[in-house]
Image (cartoon, rainbow, N blue to C red):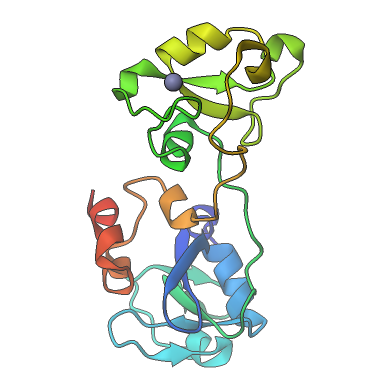
Length: 198
Ligand SMILES: [Zn+2]
């Protein structure tokens, strides 16, 4: 069984066939095996439980994983059978994701300068033990960043627009470009397809 095939992504749909997440092929197989999800044939939209999925004919050139006595097609898309079957994941902390969370706005003055003029501000400065985390980092424009420096917002008369927190889970955005499968196209809303095709 190829471990690289198992770590590739599978798209996860909720019971309304709305794409909510991606997971690894390995975890998708577990979801299907335990009945938490069913596998979808992306060409025919047929829905399969594990037994019928494992019995599907697989062409040698189709992506598959090998068990002891069978070639099992890789589930590229699965649909959950109940709500909350997939545990929430933390959205990776990165400048790109922080920019998305703060909508390109300085979190002190609310201005939207050019991206290059926005920097990541540690609300509790690193020099005082502040962490680099969703809860302690915000976007700040150059003037606010200079004014704040290594102090707390209230010490320099700045106030946050809102308390920083982990953004709502949206792991579809977490799939690195180029790793999104063409077969997902028809399961993604139009707004996601731009990223999928890139
Ligand atoms: Zn500002």
